[in-house]
Length: 187
Image 1 (cartoon, rainbow, N blue to C red):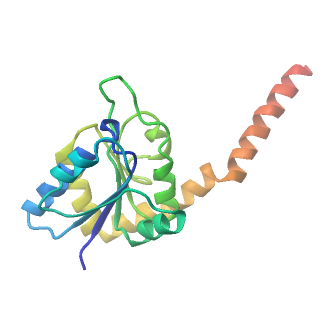
Image 2 (image 1 turned 90 degrees about the horizontal axis):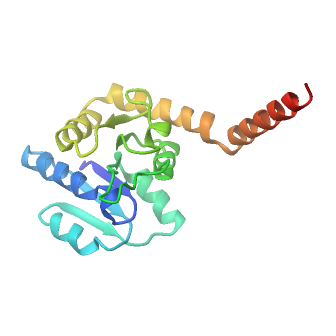
């Protein structure tokens, strides 16, 4: 069965899709039969289509929630290759990473902006330096071939995302902050 690599994000330079496409080209050159799916729309649509020529590639410009959930469930690896763009803009938290973890998809991301708040390298995902195409190649290959690593990343990510980022967890943290403020004001 052909493994699928999924990435979700606007088609803008900051999302780094070109680095992911370069990595997939290298994997194909190394003999891997692999499929790439990118979900998003934006000004780089045509450039991304051009760069992905020759790959088993599908670009989805718009998906409803059920269709997007199906993409997460059908993929084998999720990659968010965000970079710092020419204007100095960085990735925020990367909510798509949390979605991928929720749907039990192993995550690889570039260490950019708030991504390190969600991805703990080697624990719940793989974090690489920005623009590290060779590292991305190795990480994708490792996740697709090392079942123990894959299982570990999926299990810890699923548990971690629900422990740290669920609505209940966030509400509890807010209540704790309010209580500490109120408690400090009463002293």
